[in-house]
Image (cartoon, rainbow, N blue to C red; front, side, top):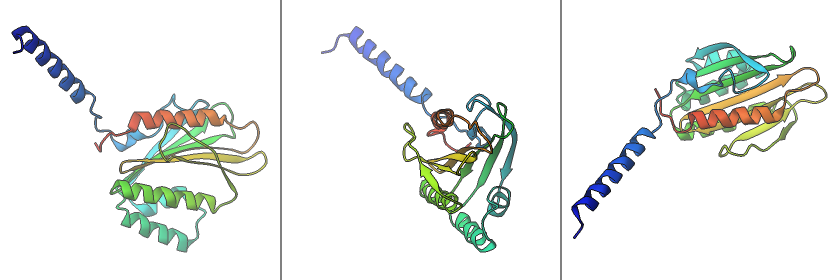
Length: 200
């Protein structure tokens, strides 16, 4: 038989564990809170945040190299993937006037739809020119690649988490280029901040 004081101790411990489990549950996050913050990517500062609710508007603003046929096919895919909205954040280089960046978060119908769109984004970016992959540890199934030759180019990181797809990228026209390590650190910080948080 358990002594009364031991029963009380066990009850207190059980209640404390339950309280920790409840408090640790990820809280809902709005879409606009799922882009990089001012301090996450050194050398860049947020310039503008916009929200798009239709595939056509988003692609017209940020995917301008596709042919009309490619864009129509992509719009159809995003509709099948049940696009809800995309929050985009343009980034301006503060350390170098030739630097530019972009962070966006896309809400889709399901986790499978987010993974599908990740593959589409990679295919599209790689079709614009040679792409060299680089590793990003700490983010499951992240896709990271460099585009460009010579002094100009861009580094891009994509990852999905639940029904959301995330992108963080930086580009430059002249040397010196932004530090890739800082971009990777920003993507990891973003992943830790949004991972598992449900829709607001």
